[in-house]
Amino acid sequence: MTYKQQFIKFMVENGVLKFGEFTLKSGRIAPYFINTGNYKSGAQLAKLGEYYAKCIVDNCLEADTLVGPAYKGIPLAVTTAVSLYNHFGKDYNYCFDRKEVKDHGEGGLFVGKQLTDGERVIIIEDVMTSGKALRETLPKLAQAADVKVAGMVISVDRMERGLETNLSAVQEVYKEFGIKVYSIVTMADIIAAIEEGIIEGKQYLDKMIAYRKTYGVD
Image (cartoon, rainbow, N blue to C red; front, top):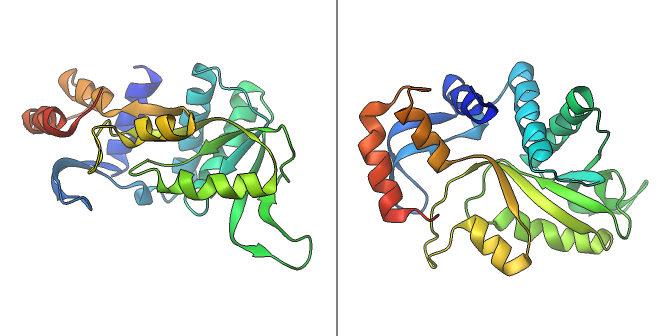
């Protein structure tokens, strides 16, 4: 199996990717649901970091520092940094933002690497629904230093248009900020994994394809 297929199987086995009938926050009725909150063990986190690291290497992303937006992005940035070093010999810095600026001690808005002008960063997140996390993170980065965002890495690109435009959240982010979002897998990859028997769920295949036909983008 490819690492993408392995990751899809990993999500299913850990109860992160589920099939059925789910009412999303948008009000849409989806035949699948992704709950990254079901990652909760050291073994899961270590493996998750490997997939993020592989995505970064495969897409030839180069940077100095990984940024993990609080809160979900914090463990993701840490485990990705560890995996990049252990498996690829790449030693990246990492940092994450505070919810409030610390006005005592060393102070500052970020914990970990203190960002400097010209530094290249990769933002690490779980999934992108609306781009809200990125929109909240960019002003904080700009406040800290004049950094260059080399890209953003997420686990799954839903490839689903928003409520107000015909663009997906990933496409909206690129159009608005010029930041390219890289995903370990896409919804098209998940559908292909069902079709190829990598994971079970062929009873949901017709609904998956129909949902994608209704709400999907390329």
